[in-house]
Amino acid sequence: MQRIRKGDEVVVIAGRDKGTKGTVLSRVDDSHVIVEGVNVVKKHVRPNPHLGVAGGIVEKNMPIDQSNVMLVNPETGKGDRVGFKEVDGKKVRVFKSNGAVVGAKA
Image (tube, rainbow, N blue to C red):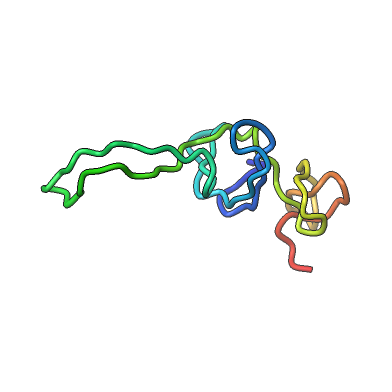
């Protein structure tokens, strides 16, 4: 079970975009995630008329290592570590600081 999943709100804790908050758009592999507005690069793209792609310079979100992001705790608004706990026979993610279940509606 992954500590950081698609759709989670995260904050970057290291690197060029330190302090930036964003939503996880996807997981690339076991250790990399793509976060909205983080690690954006400019890529030169060749035109491809068969695919209807216009050429030019486009901005693209690149993967960032999951060790460089932390889940945002909505109660504090800060990054928080995540652990696992069994609740009602199901394994759920919980915040280490206050024990609240991740994604639970208050």
